[in-house]
View 1 (cartoon, helix red, strand yellow):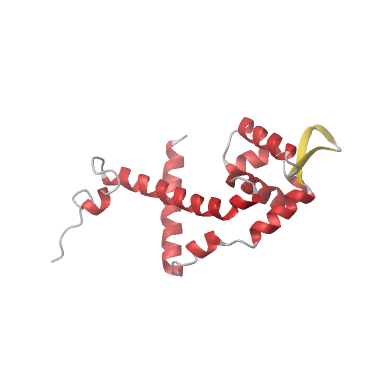
View 2: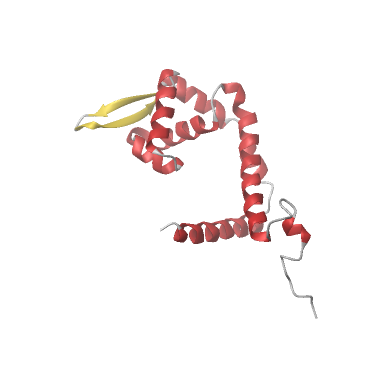
Amino acid sequence: MSEAFNREEKLTYRKYAPFMNSSYNLYVHIHMTQKALLSARHSEIKGLGITIMELALLTIVSGLGGAATPAEISRLIMRRRSTVSGLLNRMERNGLIKRSEYKNNKKLRKVTLTVKGQKVLDQTEEMDIINDIIGSISDDDFRRLWALLEKLQELALKQTK
């Protein structure tokens, strides 16, 4: 007969914060993994003079074409509108994006890339550290990880309502 699995008794699942239970250690582990991936991406783009958030915004604006609004950007990068507004101000000053009014709605602003912003985004597309890292896991592991993260996200979002 196999031994019953008890993650609380396994030190492996308490290695990040031994004084906390395995659930909090997993939470810390997920956070540390995210930070490591961000750090790898940051190292890759630091020579371009942009931040990870600026790259995220350039990618979103490009992906949405002429339909990017501050509200949509805020929703997609999961940041407050005031945070996005400050980011847009800085990026506009740096010549990466421009904001303009829609013809039929003077209150609504659309965000588009400048030539400089598109050039920076094009340079990042030649870099591939995230695909290199995540691509190194098997397809089965990728599917399992994806499903587990979706499950955790769904459970967490149910608790925020």
